[in-house]
Amino acid sequence: MTDRLRSPLLARAALLALVFLLAAGLSQRASAQEGEVVPAPEARPSPTAIAQAMLGDTYVKITYSSPRKRGREIFGKLVPYDEVWRTGANEATEITVTGDVRIAGHTLPAGTYALFTIPHADSWTVILNSDLGQWGAFSYNPEHDVLRFDVPVTTTPEMYEAFTIALEKEEDAPKAHLVMMWDHTKVSIPLEPAGG
Image (tube, rainbow, N blue to C red; front, side, top):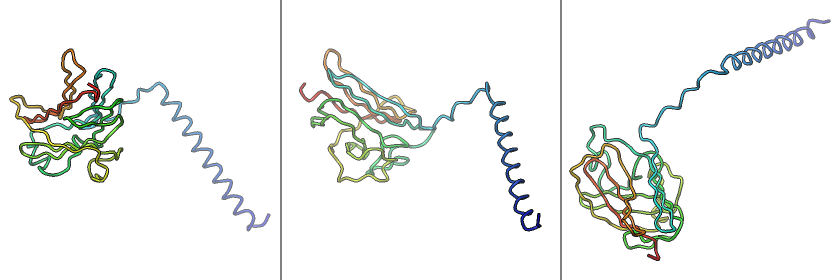
């Protein structure tokens, strides 16, 4: 066999041997890891949270990420006044209603919407937008707004460390208040089925 033929054949044989050794090593490593405990993924600093309630036959679900205060000044600083906010952290907050509802006196058709807000010192502008799956409010487009309305802000004696959204139901009625709380700030929005 000539040197010209021998050199490529030796190179291929060496490459095949290397591939075989790597495959054998990976197989041994995989079997050595069987039975080991796989740790849970790291928790997000602003974990996902869900608020949900039945209003008569209408199911309401709000999915959001819950940031923590951690000693910071929140409204007017971390969350600037007069700017669109994702209303939480990470992905934009989303609200799903399985039937038409009245929110702050406005009719909202059944569906899923991104929920944005614009915090002001004494009120918040609440925005329900049809553009889903957004990260934050960086791609917010007002042309996709379905509803926009203002609600008053109140100050609470309690300090809420975590940004919290709750659906506080009224007794003996298919009504609730969509409540958002963080630090000493609270916003409450009446919510009921459109037929009620």
